[in-house]
Length: 205
Image (cartoon, rainbow, N blue to C red; front, side, top):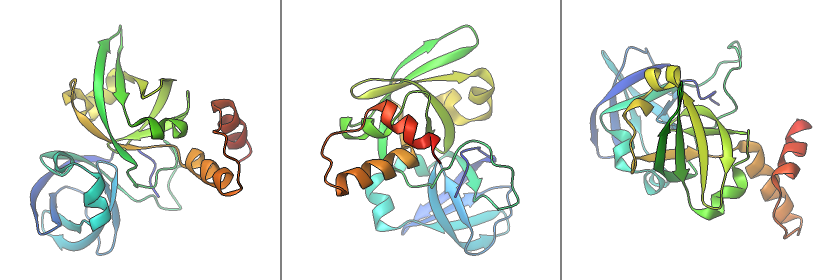
């Protein structure tokens, strides 16, 4: 489990034969779970300047190779003794989104990110979403996209400062929305949930 708070911007040294080699200050241990741009991976080797992780077939079928090259966000798995900040993040990427619009505001920047329409049910206005491992709040939801407002601090401390129209991002939708939708579908309820339904259900957790 993760929180979506980036702990370090590390560098990809190499990616060969499904092994991703990361150069980082963070001292990982064998078997540790670490999110790389929001992708939960397992440490399979510890090096003097970082660590290696292995990518499974399922992971490779979802993500884009651009997300495992250059500089990347990293977050070690949450410990029980940690403060709970951000939101509950699994490190399971649902889909690839694309930045379609960017609008500069007084002290923030609006990003419109497009996704396949089938994922919109899991994206809730004023709810949480993970973009390349970053815990963010959704402002508005449309038929096939959603709007984020990113403050200057977040832009400065993450790789979002380099995003532009056309940038592709790893998207992990809301955990509770996915669970609730799955439960309802398997109970034979064919109608889609409204955002009000999701909000009410989440309030019960």
